[in-house]
Image (tube, rainbow, N blue to C red; front, side, top):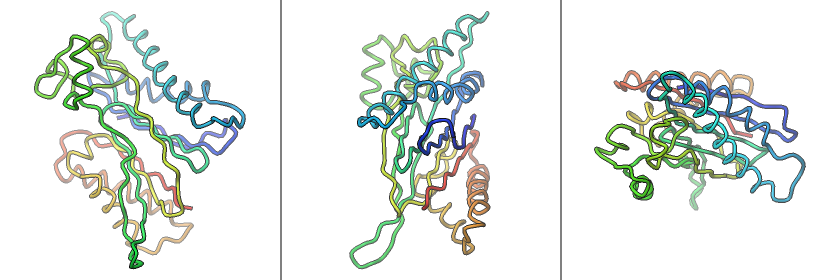
Length: 261
């Protein structure tokens, strides 16, 4: 998988962008998306303090995904022989204190939030920020079948494991689309981090287990503000290493984003 991360100072308000792209059939679609999706996002990003900024950002994300997919498919089909690469895409956009997540395929994003019960007990909960797209989901299977495709052994035409992706030119006529699910979530003072990861992690960790694992690493030492980055880096590395140790045969890419105030 490819990784993109880091703040983008170009856009006026405080905007950060993080993304994971997990390729299949080759690395070209994931590489292309990692190198171009954020550039398309910058070009299409709404300017000014529009009152319907939320709607404009969601539209911008939808347009950005469509554009990136179209551009890659154009490039892929012009090659001899044509490229058949495809990629998932999970992008997290933090605009001030609002998180937008646009997702295609089976890479995922989740957030750790601390809730206080009536008895004053604090507990950490895992909020799913993305929705997976695979051909076994009813709406996805129906769309594929309506387009003349089939789902066998949980895969499109018995081969492709995801029902939405960037690239995969040969499956786009079979109902595979590049329209992401876009969700938004208001950050609160009780939120501490977001995990973005490809499906390799989730073959050996549930979302809750991944969040608890990270919390365990972060709580091993008293996190001084100055040390926070080191602790998050360690937690991220250890989570990926533990997935590999547990025997995950797939590749494992993890981004850990601190959103604590």
